[in-house]
Image (cartoon, rainbow, N blue to C red):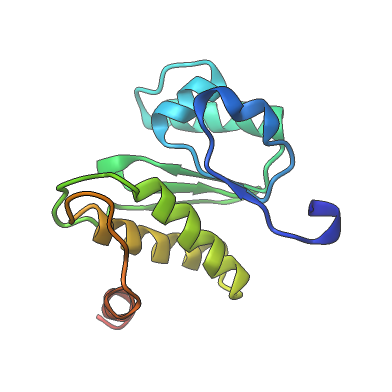
Length: 152
C-alpha cells in the first residue's frame, strides 16, 4: 500500500505489533505502547522512549499515542504535537480508540494535516466517552465543537 501511496492506519493489539511495519499511522494507547516496546510506561519520557523503540522496530510515518486523561501525543518524523484531552465528562471509554483511528484516517483522506486530524479525532473521542456504551460522534456536534475551538 505504501508503495502505491495508500495511507494505512492501524490500531494495534498487544501481540500484533510485529505485523505493522511501514504503516502511515499506528495508534496505540499507553498500555499497548508499553507492551509493544517491551517497557513500562510511567512518565512522559517513557512515552517518548517507547515511541522511539516502536519507530526503530516498525518504521511508521506517525505514532499517535492515546493517553486517556492526558490527551494524545502525535509523534511525526521531526515533530511532536501534544493535545490535552477534549473530554469534559467521561462515562465510558468504549470505542474511544476506534473513534480516534477512524476519524484521523477520514481526516487524512480528506486532505487534513496530521495536526488537524489529531485535533478533530480528539474532539470526536471526547464526544463518545461522554456517553454510556458504544457511541458515535455525530457530524453536526463534532463540527460545532471544532468550530468553537478554532473561532473561540
